[in-house]
Amino acid sequence: MRNLTAPPKPLKTSNASPPLHYSIPLNEDPIRLAFPTNLSKTQKIRVINCKGFQVSALNHRSESPDFGNGFPGTGRLKDFETKDIELKNFETKDIDIVTLGNLCVDIVLNVPQLPPTPIHERKAYMEQISSSLPDKRHWEAGGNCNTAIAAARLGLNCVAIGHVGSEIYGNFLLDVLRDEGIGMVGMSENLDAVDSSAAEYETLLCWVLVDPQQRHGFCSRADFSKEPAFSWMNALTREVKTAVQQSRVLFVNGYGFDELSPSLIVSALRYAVEVGTSVFFDPGPRGKPLSSGTPEQKMALSEFLKMSDVLLLTSDEAEALTGIGDPILAGQELLKRSERAKWIAVKLGTKGSILITLSSLSYAPTFKVRVIDTVGCGDSFVAAIAFGFVHKMPTVHTLALANAVGAATAMGCGAGRNVATLDRVIELIRAGDLNEDAEFMKVVLNGFSDIPEINLLSKEALNGAGDRVNHTSLENVVPELLARLKPPAEMEGALRA
Image (tube, rainbow, N blue to C red; front, top):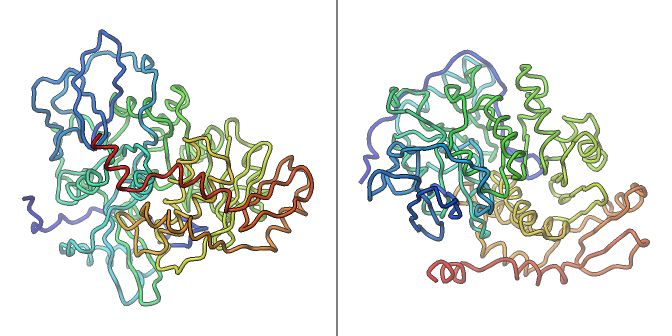
């Protein structure tokens, strides 16, 4: 058993003063090493099968692989010999989505009041709450783990790329990813040559603080440093490149810039474009600060907005980046500025969501649910958009699924392992209780006559408003969605087979 009683090391901080980040509703969005199996004949491989993932280890020295993180097929390749490999020889993409960075452990605590705003008071506040080991009941996987878990539960093959430390929090995070069937690729090389117990090499913690009014505040050591938490990383490893090349989608969000340097993140973007991997980018609340940040940050944001295949934003985030208040016009502006974007997905909170392409606009209302907690809803939404993209589903079907997954997450408390389950998503889809907004539909129909095709989801089929408007009833969408989603029992049977 791992030791879960040792006290955590104090977190190192510095004197920068970014704003405290509060949780926001859906429209504000707050392990194995997977390798290809179709290498050329000159490349030697060893294959390990774990929970449905086929894992190939290149030129391993021993018959008992140890990747340094507690179970086979995860972490950094400390026991590997690597040789020059032409990664472009890999022809198939066996991974559906890889997430880049933003792997953290959330420590969820109820507090009488949220942290103060002044930087020195907030720093003292976090040092106080982090001075002792919190009960493990309060630990949860956070950050991009939310998206990966939601995607894996929908049936996508997922790999998380990032850094976790060798301490108890890192072991916890790896256990969660393993239990959810998610691969893990470490970004670090030669950690044996440094003091990996130093704070800058530890797993990033995010303190999720909940006041009596159920408002949330977020604190981490990244909030108090001008440099990214893992600024010592400066290049993509061979293993990271392999995972990106083997994936259909690379997902990056704005919080990744808290951990990784802009140049490193941009290098992942450029490599993904080079090897034909679609890039999903969700700037989140970090979008606005990045747009007015350092020259490197502004360059990186500009390149992601220009070169991503899919952009995902809330209506407020779209306005912050374009200066346009109307979410449809803002989405069209982002599409116009981009060189590669195929989809612009905009979350509208209780109104639902829209998806804009070069030739169409699709809209789907939300599902009626009893909202318990909105943390992780936006991350879950991303997972479903990726599902629709990978499976080449119609845009209105994709939005219906994304809204259902986001709503299913809102019915639980917290994110991580509490995000939407497949059973709950299927239950919502079958119930078909849409929260239709007739006024917003009128705005879409009457205000955007220049859009060649408009797709609207509704409870029942309606008469169209011309050849360019397609009213799709949820009744017709449900069978197609259910055919795509496998209940857990069916998935387990498929894995055993």
